[in-house]
Image 1: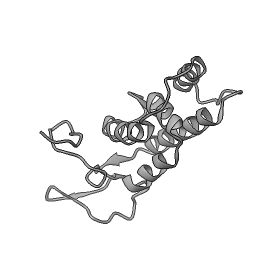
Image 2: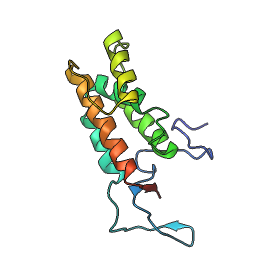
Image 3: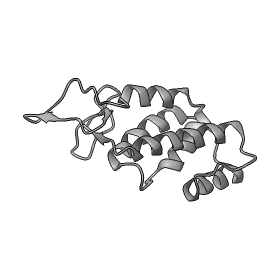
Length: 139
């Protein structure tokens, strides 16, 4: 049994084996293209952004993006791993956190009165949705 998380086919994943996000990256003979000039967001870029979040913001962002219809399920899987790794050891959500999560899922308009962690999570979730909205695919 592997200590690493697994994808839906049961393959072990690591930070280096999680797919990069690219714009319609071509596949040649079943092998992903190694260089795509159209690549907008690589996994390394997204991963580094998750690591810039505070642990509490990462936990909030994970809940804001969980099963978001605007985010491809393969992104959701990768993001949940990275965000929850970053969020390990955080305190439980407060009622204000839950209101921010619910509002984030209902509207794109940022609420007034959010704390720094909630703002950081909100902006990260908006960035992910914007990138996904550019019709990116996972190679």
